[in-house]
Length: 198
Image (cartoon, rainbow, N blue to C red; front, top):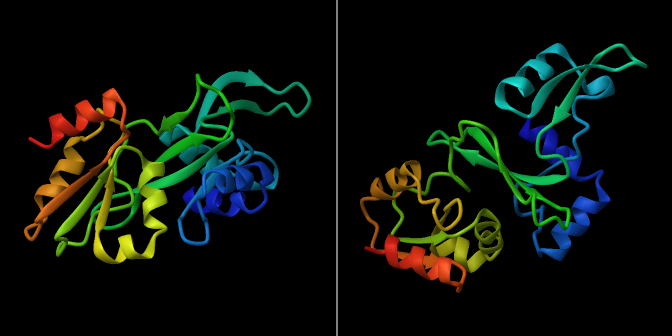
């Protein structure tokens, strides 16, 4: 699915404009876009529908389209850019979605039973690690060659999102000398850094 979303980014002007506004370069970063149309037309197969329902990308609303007589589905995380979450084998095991709409009520989405970390498990030889508050923060830093060359990066899932999988990845780094927190300079960010740095 992530490959489909990556391909869809190129045909979406609003998604490309959003990335430009956020200074995110999809020639460096792996970014996709969910227009909510992946289950329509020629793209739709029984296998795609089954997979999308299993992971939560589609919800069966129990409706029938009067015109086509086909089942109707509601897409999850429509009009969102997306980033892949990866397991220790570097396989895509989850997706993070960020709305491109200016809507305070709908910004961040994860597939159910979230697994994986962004941008992936760090190199086992990592000495210096930057831990960011959010995936877009991490993606922004990944674009800077000097940072990529000298640090490994991991994203938390918000100020309360330093989960067991991320902790396990950090604890596996036998050569780790330094962790740099890159969180927002607001009350929530300051509290999280204080809590996590213990």
